[in-house]
Length: 138
Image (tube, rainbow, N blue to C red; front, side, top):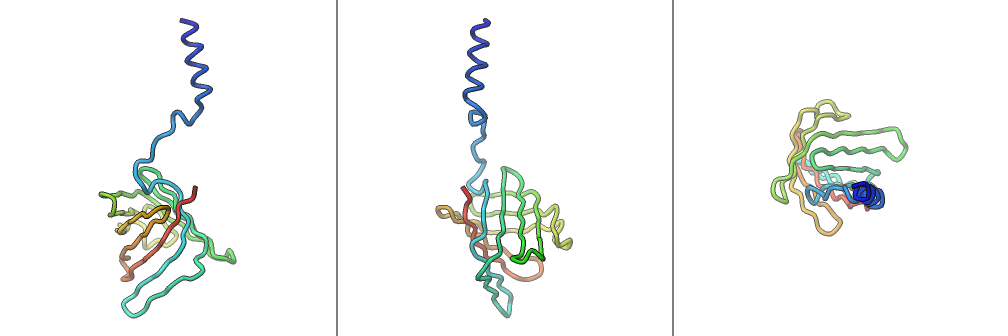
């Protein structure tokens, strides 16, 4: 019995944490860096050419994102729960956000992943469409 316990202990140590890691719950789970962004309003389109660094991190149930302007004067963040219906309907349930008017909002996006790019398009309550492309961070 001592030998069996010793062998199991040795296997657990050698296998390390990777042996107990979970497989991703969906194809969006992971870390993403923004690549491009367009804000489409009824009378104008704003294309952000030099998108300031923004990171979005998703686990199996929650997301969080953060952004800091190039000069560091502005910092934005938000997060909460999310759902993914099928492979294409991604919904964020904002539990916290720098802009308090967004807390409690439910934002729906179409989601399409091609290779390491996530195409993310959704309507905001204030009346504009947000079109973003995110690249998976390895």
